[in-house]
Length: 307
Image (cartoon, rainbow, N blue to C red; front, top):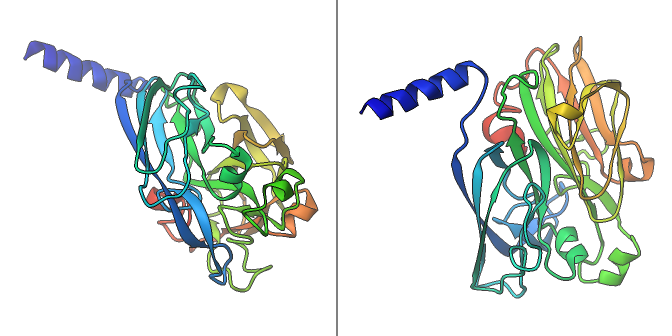
């Protein structure tokens, strides 16, 4: 009993000091080949996914945690799938090997580096599995919870390319995409360029908005820029030690990620874009609306990835 009280007291002291204790986290994702909307009008197409969503679920752990990863490949699928967590250090030939339909794969890693990382299917041909939707973000919170300023709202944006024929791997290799998108749909958060868009990102003036940005590619670099705004801080790979200040744009390559902080001193809108205009004008634009009437649920809880 004394040991239990001592451990509890130590845990309270660590939290008060801004340090979080490591724990074991179990993550289970299911590879599902399903039909999903690929635009704001609801046009459906066969997609390959984690848990039937594009992007896959946000995985959130803390630096130092032991993470048990389980991938279930649904028996109804026609293809083998795998899961490559960029936050892990593994044996690519065993831990990341493809799992056949109806089978299960497992591995364990320790989240040694804080930041925001890409995860994706690595089954062959990897370019097709990523292009068809098998990607997501894993956020490794720093164990020192005072190493970054506290955000008022958080959003995840994952950039990727859409290809007109998801069966045509040669076109993917030749980079013949039709749209560059955030979170799976062109202009998903931009009713200015697509009247069928029903959502925007929201915050109040003066609030610190943190955007966890992942570039799923599979091919294009992103010049990530807030039109009518400035990135207050940029953290390459999301690591608090990698901080840059007052950035107009920051380039994130395919398979990479970064964390971006922004706030607005007044009401109005920023347009978050890839400043490669061919990318922006085919879908890579998200409106961030600063308003005193911002929905208090937006950028919090389940609305970090706005679906």
